[in-house]
Length: 413
Image (cartoon, rainbow, N blue to C red; front, top):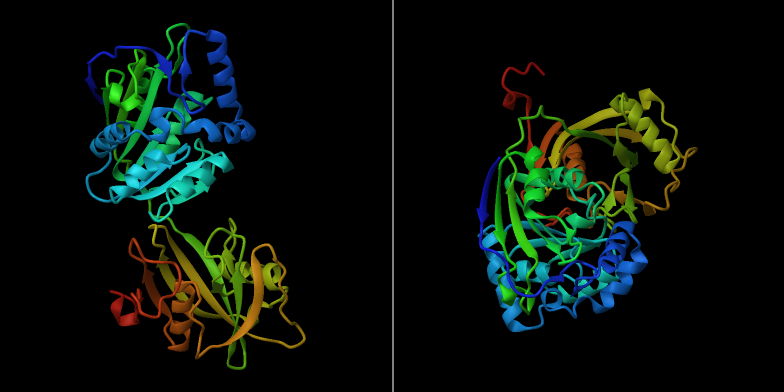
C-alpha cells in the first residue's frame, strides 16, 4: 500500500466534531459517554441528536463560508465527473447535498429515521435517494458506486477494519473511499488517528492519501487544535472472479389468451409494478423444481413437472449492473386450481391480462420476456444500461436482443 500524507499540523482550539454533536473537549467522562452512545446503536439517541445536529457550523453548513470551504474540498476528493456516490452516516444530508449539487448521483444512508427525514427535506429536488440503514452494513449492492463517503462514523464502530472491507466491496474498479475522521480532545482524546486508519486500510491494498484538515478554520467555523483529516483510499483492484449469476424462474400461467400477473408491494424493489409469479432458485435446486415451489408459495397452485413447458431463457442485467439468468416456464390454467395471493406482504393483487395487449406498468425485463414468448423466441438478452429505469417504458430504450441459434457460434440447437 502506498501512503501519501499532507504533514501540515493542526492548530487552534480543540473540540469534537463527531456525529453526535461537537462539544468542547477536556472532559474524559463526557467523551466516554459519547462513544458509548455512538457505539450502542440506540436509534432514539440519534433521533434526539437530529434536532440539534445542524447547529454545529460544519454539520448544518449554514454559514456560506463554511459551506463553500466544504464544497471546494469535497470536489477535490470525489470524482471530477458525475458519479455514483454513497454517503454513509449521512446525518441531515449536508455533504450529500453538496455532492448532489455538483451533479453526482447520491444515495445517502443513516440509521436514524429522524436524520433521514431531515436529509430528505434538505435533498428534495436533487434526485438523491435517502434510506434508513446501518452504515456498518449498508443496504447497497456490491460494485455499484464510484465513491463511498463516510464522515465521523468509523470511530464509533466496534470492528472498523471489517467495515472498511465491506465498504470497499461496494466500489466499482477504480473507486475510492473518502473517510473524514479525527482524534478529538486534549484530555483522553477519542477517535481514529490517521496512522491507525492507514493500518486498518492495509488489507485493502492500493493507496491511501491523508490530508490534515485541523488547520483549516473555515471548515469548522472556528479555530481547532485536535487532529482532523481526510483519508482518500483507493483499494487495489480485486483479483478476477469466476463469473456467477443469480438464477430465477418465472411462470407464464395462461388462461385462454390471458396471462396471470402479480403487482409487487412492500419488497423495496419494483413495488407497484406488475410481474409474473417468480423467484430465485434455492441452493441445489433445479429450475423446474424451483418453478414448482415458487408457484405453490406465491399463488397456491400445485403444478406437476409435465405441466411445465420451458419457454424462454433470458440473461438480464439490471440498471445497477447486477446480472441474472431467468428461466420462463409456461403452464395452462386449471379452473379447479384457482390462483390465490399467498404472499400479501409482497403482492397487492393478482390479475389476468391479455397477452397480446400487456399493460405498461410492468417490470421491464418481465415485459421483455412475455413479448419474446409471444414472438416464439427461445433465447434473449436484456441488458440495461446505467440510468435505465426498472419499469417498462413504451417510448424506450428497449434492451431486448433475441439470440437465434445461428447467432451462437458452434451451436447445434
